[in-house]
Length: 620
Image (cartoon, rainbow, N blue to C red; front, top):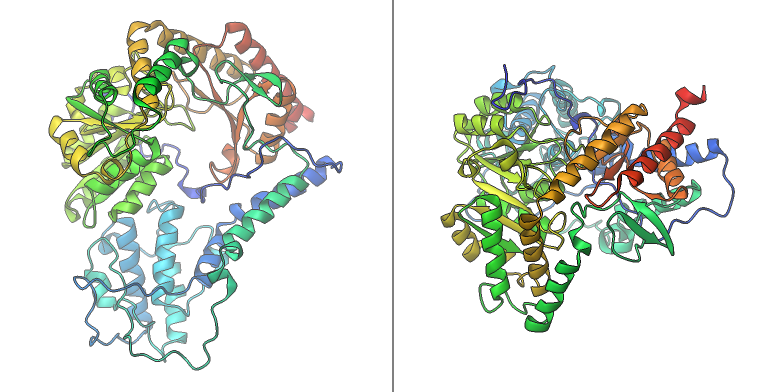
């Protein structure tokens, strides 16, 4: 079958769930610093493998979670806590297996009757790393004697997990489930949101053998994750490769940038239309500071609104073709606060598997059940909602207009058709599509020619094509008015600074006045993508956007390639595991409208040379 946009609907699209991990730690070093001791290639490879191994091994992650996590005892919510008089049932194998199924159903959003022993949690049920963490933490809380078997961590099945937990439950049956654990019958009848465990009676005496809590629980510097991060930094330095993170750029960043006094061609920033360094945008920001000061000095709900805020909100609504819009002080926080405010327990958020962290954090804040669907696969979304929609009150589907890692465009018409068929709501994050997509840069709505009200919530950032900092949400007048009075990230936050509001306002007006910037950006992106593909470099599914990945397929070679280009005068960011699967490690190029054809050709040639030197196929 074909989607309304002409793209075949399929459930075989690539999805990163199988290898997803935690958000990568970012080494806090400000300069490219190569180890003073020389390293051979084999020593470097070994060091980088050691660097990546802690994040790559999901089994170790799960074992650490299940083996070290104490059973928390939060204060019970009087409306949801279980009666203290209810005794927990005996922890036999049957009860434990039923408990596992109930927790898998809760996290996956599939009903218990849908589950089979041979189903893989990741491949068949769509679990990602956060869902696995949620599941294993809940099971460890209920069955503290259970330890996850690392041998099955790579591809756990429903039946294997149930057997593992049941075996541990039988072993520890003399004591029954942990105090505060949800009884099996209660778990099966629970709503999609996991209710908190009941608190143990306050009168329970502390065990006579209890000593002081370990330092890793009482001193921040001794937290295991902080210690592991410090070890990773040491390993990165030992690898002898330049540190690509926290580089200090000493001026504006458009087609070029300056690092340590050296001018490089820049493909590492998303100043897509060059307006962050445009004189008119800078002048608008300076004038706003002169007139309004450097801060809004209050929430906009109270006394923080300025005329420039109202002008910006109006221009954003016009740009997006919506009835109304409101700007917020932070782009990441916009998604977090809006999602967290509009849905909650008893609701379901279904998001693309490659959704941005701000979307995931909004889901966690909301308390709604969260479920990813395979990347850009409207058919898989349709099948999922067919199975689970009836179990939830509200269902919110969240996607990005242009995906920041792959540079492909969401199939918006197909998504609209699916959400209408199932009575769901649709939210589109246009962070990387506003200003870059559509004939005049008005985003994926313009690109596909959809009716803007068909998408209930449009969100985005001001920090990319719109040359400022902050976020926005747009939609119907009633929705935006409600958010202006109630959404916490707006009501309880100082308003967008006058300078940021003025810069974004000037950028929106410049975009409307100079649509040729968008055309030039599109031409430059097509030129660069075509040249690197001719050089035999895999650019994945990127098509028609300024986000062009160079997929290397190995984190060590990706770091080396970034360093080689740096030496040749090109700034580009490496994206490593676990931000992407190891076999999809890449350099991510952001093309701008300000790059010249000569700069693009020089960069593509340098990339091709460096890639050939480092590619084992060529070396052989």
